Amino acid sequence: MIEQITSSFSTENYWDLFWLVRNSVITAAVLGLMGGIIGIFIMLRRSGLVVHGIAEISFAGAALFLLAGLDVVLGSAVGAVVAALLIGVLALKDKDTSGVTAVLMPFGLGLGILFLHLYQGRSANRFGLLTGQIVGVDDVQTRTLVTGAVIISAVLILIWRPLMFASVDPQLAAARGVSTNLLTIVFMVLLGGAVAMSVQVVGALLVLALLVVPSAAALKVARHPAAVVALSCTFAVISAVGGIMIAIMGTVPISPYITTISFLFYLVCLLIGWRQRKARHRTAVQAA
Image (cartoon, rainbow, N blue to C red):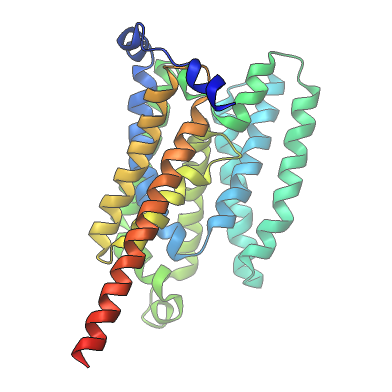
C-alpha cells in the first residue's frame, strides 16, 4: 500500500498546479492561524469532545443544504452555530458539557448520513463533507472563509483577557465579576464558526487535527501564553498549507497529509516536553 501511495507522486507541472490551488493555500493559512488561536481556549476548557460534536452537526447542516441545492459552506456554518448554541445553553443548565455533547453527536451524524443517502448528486460531494474539499474553493468561498476567520480571530483577541481568566479559573472569575456565562455563549458561537470553516479543510471527521492537535502540541513545550499561541498557530498553518502542497503531487486526498503532519508535531513536542520535565526534575533534585 505504501508503494502504491509513493508511486503516485509526481512533481511534473508542480508550480502550475500550485497556482491553480493558490486560493486553497491562502485560505488554509488563515484558517490555520484562527485554529491556532482558538485551540488554546479549547484545550483550557477541555472542549475537544465539543469540537467533534459540533463538527458532526455541522456535517448534518452541510448535507441538508447539499440535498436542497443550497450553499454547502452556509449549511455547515448554520449547523455548527446551532450546535454550539445548543451545547452551550444546555451545558450551562446542567454543567455537563461532555454529556450534552455525547447526546447530540450521534443525532447530528445520523441526520447527516440520512441527508447524504437521499442526495442523488456526485459522490465526490458526499465524500468531501467528511474529508474536506478545500482544493475546490473558488474566489467567493475564499473571501467568505478568510473574512470569517479574521472576524473570529479579532473577536477572540478583543475578549482575550476575560476569556482566558474564565477558562483557567471560572469560579474565581465569576467571583471577580466576570460574566462567565455570557463569555461561554460567545465562545461557543465563535467555536461553531471556527468548526464550520475548518470542516472545509479537513472534513467533519478530522476537524480535531486543525483545532485541537496543534494547541495540544504547543502546550507540551511552552508555558508562556504568547509562546503557546505562536507555536500553535505555526503548527496549524504548516499542517494545513503543507498538507495541500504535498497533496497536489499525488492522488491521495488532502486530509490524511494534514492530520499526519499535525500528529507528527504532537509526537515531537511530547518527546521534547518529556525531556524538559526530566531535566527540571534533575535540576530540582540537585538543588535539594
